[in-house]
Image 1 (tube, rainbow, N blue to C red):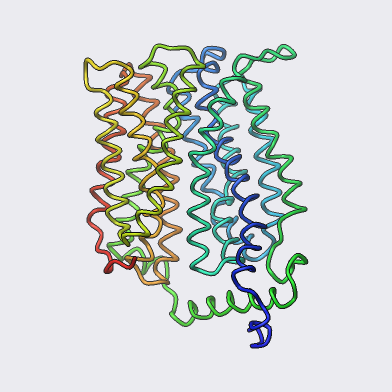
Image 2: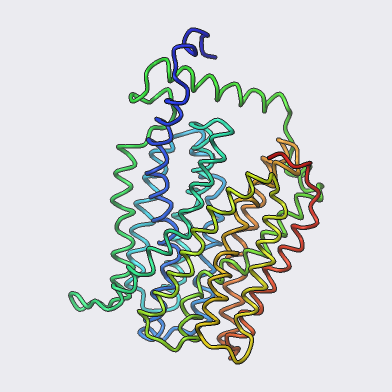
Length: 431
């Protein structure tokens, strides 16, 4: 614990700003690159399928198997950040996933595609849960929530930026290599570069930070230690005890069902827009970028609205249900593509609206110790959804089902997920 005189000598608001500006910009950039490298297969698919003769079922399984690989090192990765070094672990993750993502450009068979996607999941596993743990080394609880909200903006931002960049890359033919291959190479290699940047720039813990004064290091370490001791005093709960709590299962099933629609919609959006519009690949990716831009606005609006009202449950549940309704409206017969695109933009707004409020629900519906265990289980459900939703969507498309039944399946996932979350019993509102 820091000495009283050390605390008095620290300008706390200045310290909080200094930590945020040192940590958050790079972490957000890393997460942008991370999400783009897992999702850019959706953009490459517009040319890759025809070039390699891959069916929709091949893409469905290949996209989904990423999430099976992701589960392998998710929990060990978080433990390595806690007990070893976030800086070194993140650098390893970045270099390996960048190399594997770039190497996907050279697959020629379905089996090679499956292995590339699987090992990309293994390579990237532990990154997001590792960031969550890393934030506990630098931000007290009230600042940690804001940091996580800022991080979530990286998801739609990465895809909104990735769509136009991918559009340009699809048409290049340098050195006899097709555009879809350059897409994987150009978008994968920045992760390798950022791996070395991470080694130089990131600091594992406040006590290692030469960019903080001794008083600032002592103050921050003291605050974080006090929070950790308070959690220890509150007691722990085992996984088996958590599994007996109804709220845990509602949260796990809610995100599993909803994310089955959410992940599949993100990965198959360019294909859907192209089929609905009948336009070029470039126009398809432009429209996809507009969809994700609506998501950027949504994350910001949702966070502010949930904080202002103190309501998280209905922000999450209503966002899920509205997404499903808007998506279902996009396949009403007789509409022009312009009208369908309006519905899809509303879908994009809803698809990112629920995420930030949802991840606050464990702490609102469970005790602190139960919430800690439940968050890991919920994240596993969220990632399993990525396999299930994409595999089913690929199967539907390979078996001759058109856009309408595929999108109605995804819409149903969102609506059912929202209905499950609506059953939660939440503590009184705390704006």
